[in-house]
Length: 205
Image 1 (tube, rainbow, N blue to C red):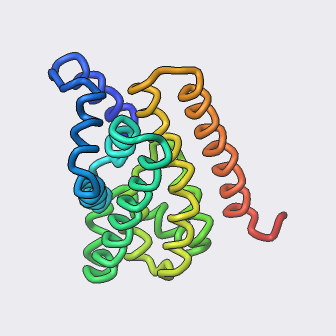
Image 2 (image 1 turned 90 degrees about the horizontal axis):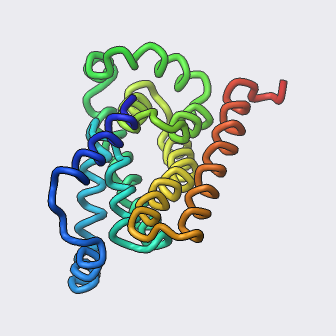
């Protein structure tokens, strides 16, 4: 649902907001050099630490940068935001975060407590499932820091790559960028299935 809303929002922007051409935006980013990278990463980290869907930022990474650079910057930004949200949840405590998580509370507590690493990885990979409940739920319900960070990193790379590839395809709709999108989403699908199986059947049963 969240992913659909974001895509509808993107369509509204395309048809109702007059933006500079993509190549002009890319030139502006190149002109400011590393400052543009830092700004993008910082903004992404802020978004990732809130309930705002990260899809928009990842797609923007593909529009503004090439696929490799956009993926690297998106992964850095989203990991910083996820890491910050985890510690915010740890600081606020389970009782406060349980109220904030609302309907996400019960399933997250059940799944994250029983299988932290694979639960985090699976939920991160699932298209349309927001990042923020996983961030705050992991901190609130006792997922250990190292498994949380590792699961987030391993699972966010293919997810971010697939979204950045969409942005790159919008900027340059070619056979190559189209194949990149297909490869990215195929990887997400395969890894989601693998993580889910390990989550539900950790002993290979």
